[in-house]
Image 1 (tube, rainbow, N blue to C red):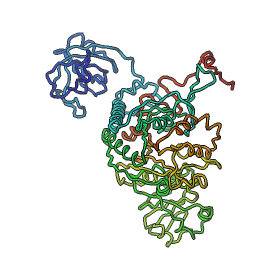
Image 2: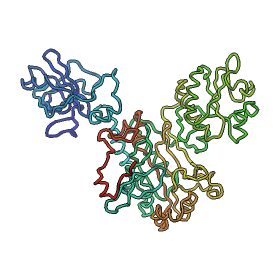
Image 3: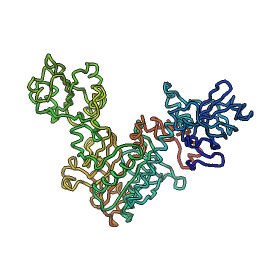
Image 4: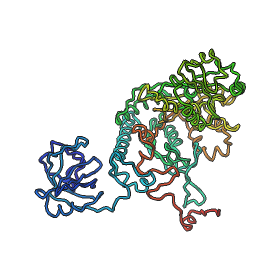
Length: 588
């Protein structure tokens, strides 16, 4: 028997009892899951985090006081019971403990419970209460077996990560939570200092600068299960605070990082029953955007975007002509058997493309009566053949700049896969996306592609200042089933190059000193080549469990409005407390 649950009040956890324990005396504790009265015999399903166990009560083996208690006991009451393990007369194959029950001789109530605001026990036909209601009563929601299993899996994944990284010679080193505001792509959460009025700490968006400084200090291999904070708009895959497996190492190339992370994710997948077979495929950012319209393509399906600019060069469509004359391309999806989609279904796909920023989609069907659809009058039979269109097929096209058509076609790809029920080519799809742009252009300004510390690709070093928009960085993302699990890069270790990059990003000397002076001084002290990555624990558990959102894999999550409903945060602060921090609220 598993002894890990043994305490003064219990001999075992309820989910550990099996047929081999028949005849043994046991003490068990937990919550009343549900009660049944079968004409003088009473049955309780007792629950703890290891599972359910049937307790039986009858006048032949239960004392009178305990029988009186069980007649009135309510759901979620905390109890302690003593008795003998016996075979169940009606085994339940759906329960791990379904072959046995405890015939209770003595029952004690450890604590009563008011009628639960939300049910913990639900039959398969019942729907969960609304998410807001479940988050307000999170202590009850967290009693649900599925959430307890998920959080236990999360624990085992983090433990495996620690063991794996330690086994590879990495040291776990904690970095500060109260730190300095730095631009990393999102807004900082600011923390006012009482000791230094008018000055502020920031909660870290990541341990980025600290882990680079640890490399400069000579620690060589670092990791941390790091808490990070970003004051940004939330979605199903975002939380304002999150956990990541943060990694950094010295004297490395991307190949070293790939090897460690492939080994790590294979180990973590083993914990969760997810198959991972390194080495993982690799694809450049440019290739991913060209073939799938996304830098995190879901390769479980083989459907790719096609370039029809040449095939449709002679089409007399004003839309197509304007797109190509403006330097854009005509790209689209060729769907075998897609002609069976109705106009309404095609419009639903088009709505997804529009939501991603496209003005619309053009479509073309090939059937027994020839070509049909909005593109039919512009496309000849020979052009349709050049596009690869056969009878029964559907072509969906978008025309314009790749910045517009790529996200639109990526959204359309996901929509048609669902609409046509296209079967998966594989169940698990791991991928490294490499060589991201070093910069992004936005209104004539340059922004950092990943962050400002990415080392330029050696082949593009000459472009950094002459043609920065085309320069690539040694940045890479790990993608699993269409979700970014981790992002990393080789870092700049030369102070002069780092200053040049800051300058290209419009960061002047004074601002550079205020925000990054400590990093530049560290780089000048003799920085080794180094790089790293961070894997999102929340997202990884979400993907491994196929959970609907991150809120299903975090014990106490925030809503999409960034509110903690259980404890009621954020909350107003008294004027006197603000004054102590040297703060006051502006009048609206």
